[in-house]
Amino acid sequence: MSVPTRLVRRLRAARENNTEIRNQETLEGILFSLPYLLVFSVFLLYPLLKGLYMSLHDWNAIYPSQSEFVFLENYVRMINDPMFWNALWNTVYFVVLTVPPLVMLGLALALGVNRQLKGRRFLRMVFFSPYVLTVAVVALIWIELYAPSYGVFNYYIMQIGIEPPNWLNSATFGMPAVALATIWWTLGFNFVILLSARQGIPERLYEAARLDGAYGWRAFRDITLPQMKPALVFVTVVQFIASFQIFGQVFIMTGGGPGNATDTLVMYLYKAAFNQHEFGYAAAVGYFLFVVLIAVSMVNYKLAGDSA
Image (tube, rainbow, N blue to C red; front, top):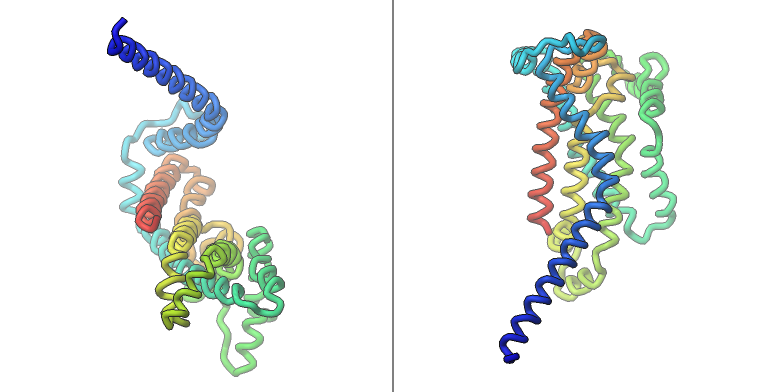
């Protein structure tokens, strides 16, 4: 047998062996992912498709087989409903009130506690501890703080001779009051993420910068911010998604009132489904929210890719 023929046979055998290995790895990968794919299909994919199906019907929750197919009628109604736009505007207003303070305060606290301060471990616990509370506990605490007759805020406002507002029953102050409670509650999450990101920056970068005369703001601008960019993008998008789904605090603290001044998108969806029993219309609103959150996730993916 000639040398070229033996070489060709060896190469062919090597290719067949590699193909068998790839097939074996593919089969193992599928078997390894199968439990997750099963859970994903049952608890996420099926509800997602069922929600889309419901949004195209005048849904009868008691007798689903009697539901009437209305195609895009629920979506057209949603677009033409002033209450929907009011809820969307209130939700955007809440996002604007909460996301920038949550990111900037989280960053400020993370940088401050990262310094060699006495009692910094205690401060870390203090800043993070509200985050472990449930939404019901947080709402009840802040309802007491905002109480018109004996609340802490109104007490100090009256001490300086100003007539205090009825915070949670005010169309002007209702949403900012809920936003302040939310900032106090969820700030600890951002604080922990950003503190971890700051501690992951090698100190040799700051030492090299000091040799070049870079201190204070210049070191923050040229080292700290670029190094923490992935974490900042992450907390910004997570907070945006969480704020856009605001429900529990509003439901307990204001019930969407006074009037509809604090009626958010999820609150509007809840009322459509469980107060008015219009489940198809509520599913259409839910799908609008889903599309918005998917768009934000794609922005997150783009920003995270650019910062990598």
